Length: 113
Length: 116
Image (cartoon, rainbow over all chains, first blue to last red; front, side, top):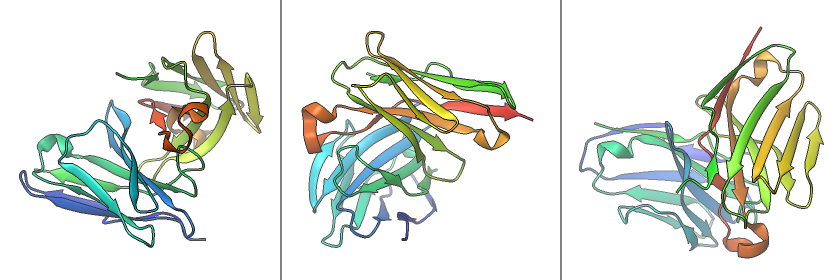
């Protein structure tokens, strides 16, 4: 079966702009979690969506938001981009979420200049 | 507050020898632990997990040990192979406490280099 698909793979944005990243989970998976990976910080949890509802949220400012559609595809949006937002953004899908059975996508590399 | 810590950013090992990657955690509610492996330009892939009711879990060349009293887990790879060179992340969750609202907390990763 197809894996987790994240688009785009690479993105360059200017400070102050906004960006939307997309994640298509494995068919049948209802949960999508988003993580930010930066050097020295590991994977920092952003939020989890389950059946179109945000079920859990990490400690990120309100500039980071997300949503999930009825087909379980998820988007995350970052507004008013800052240089420090440059990172690899990973999404993980699973059937029930909550840390069980995660499959990660290859990520979107965001560079803010 | 880093609840899951990997204090060694990197580790270099000779092919055929044992690789030992370490991970410490601070939250006593964590009861499920996992190791992920990540190659550049790819997402992390699941390697092995262990529940807090066990102290050891083995899968081929990979063994994870859990010391609950010390809040410490380790991943042993024997024998190490050049293809094992990657970043290894440990992760933890509190399955028994938060149910479906759990989140997976990751460490900062250890870059393993296996020299031929």
